[in-house]
Image (cartoon, one colour):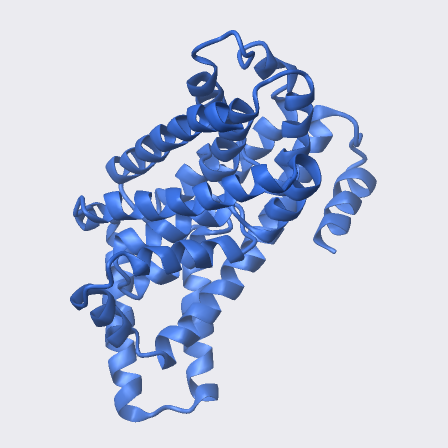
Length: 322
């Protein structure tokens, strides 16, 4: 429905051409803005309900005080793998986890894995590359989320969360304590929960519009052939170059897998193409803009630098085994 509405507004009401770069960019902007706003409000409301009723203090205490031997990172990465979100759509849930006080490394495990591995990517990979490539990709994607979360969690990066998030954490804790004492009925809590959800949406409004605008420009104006000349098998730096070129772009697995299939068909190594895909769906300038509301630039740079390095290493690994 959202895509049909975007098509109607852009191609019928505005009269833009569907085959033009500008028309594709505006259509992408309409579709993704509506989708992310709806998703952000819905997930923020759901997380508000969970924070109100679920013993988040006990969960936080359980995750921080017990020796789980890395299982918390595995479960967070696995949860990311079963949620069909792109890098920007994953951020609302990330905000909810951080707001609830879940350890930062665990939330990063979810954020890393969610756009990389999901049922859409798995289904398209099976049909395009077969079972062996799909299994290797899924396992390595989950491991990337786990290892990335463990490394980032061990760096004590909480001071680099934004003041906005810290205030939300304090407000969430105080509200939960009041509600627990008063045993307020659900329908009495709901208006405040929805109000807080809308406050989250309003708080990231500017960042969403700027981020999606950048993604829309990349979507419409960056030609596919531009990358192929740098991703050939003869170029030893093809993997890092493909990742660097991919980071400014923005797409989900469904949008990028057909492009990767074309790359491979034209002779680009599978590992290089997969590294390009992981960077496109897992890291993007729009995602960085959205994360700016949640964390400071230093933390964003650490996150992007670390995951970029891991994706480059995976690209060389894929080229060696596939």
